[in-house]
Amino acid sequence: MTSIWEYANPRRFMVASGTLLPWITGIAALCLIGGLIWGFFFTPDDFRQGSTVKIIYLHVPAAIMAVNAWMMMLVTSLIWVIRRHHVSALAAKAAAPVGMVFTLIALFTGAVWGQPMWGTWWEWDPRLTSILILFLFYLGYMALWEAIDNPDQAADLTAVLCLVGSVFAVLSRYALVFWNQGLHQGATLSLDAEQNIADVFWYPLITVLAGFGFLFLALVLFRTRTEIRARRIKALITQEQMT
Image 1 (cartoon, one colour):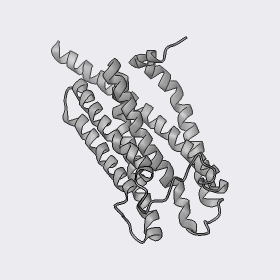
Image 2 (tube, one colour; image 1 turned 30 degrees about the vertical axis):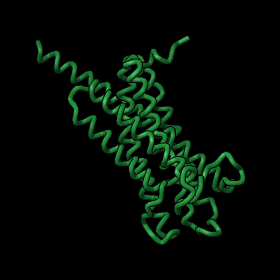
Image 3 (cartoon, one colour; image 1 turned 135 degrees about the horizontal axis):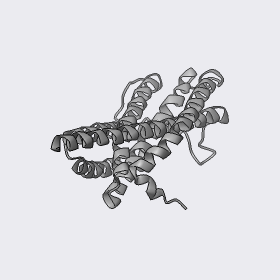
Image 4 (tube, helix red, strand yellow; image 1 turned 180 degrees about the horizontal axis):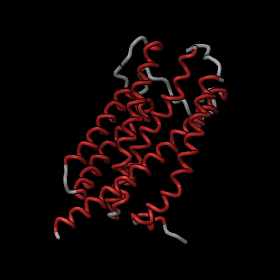
């Protein structure tokens, strides 16, 4: 049986990801297009929030992926620290801009949703504040990668930053559990059927969430492949300069 660690070899990773990438991209496109059309055009208005509720099809998946992207970066960073697999470090680096965009989408759509519901574009709510701090951590993470020339040293230091930032990733997900206050509503998706949204909204939302997940995976694979190629080119240039 093939060990998963064999795909830490850049050559094996390039072959496997090249095969999977078109399929993952296609599934992402189908889920996103189908789910968004279903959600925006074939679901009713909410009896309290009206048509404004339909922003959940962008806000909720973006917010969930913003947190999950950082947690994926944490896992791959820890793999780098423990096993020194370069592909895992490059995957963490590749995921950061994608997660940052998801976080920005969550902040923007949250403001658009909050203004008519709360009467303000922003509130220093525990969940809002923690996801804003998470966004700043994304920016700091990417800046740290660019600031250090040695890629191994950059991977080590960004792994530490990723570990610290994971605290705010957890807080942004469970802020309402830790602090039972603030304007932000409870979880839109819950394992508790009594707290979950109605099925008419739930099914298209799950479809869009799957699309965001596959989109994230496709973008990370694509960007990781780009990082591997860039490192190979840099190694060839260095070797040529030495000769």
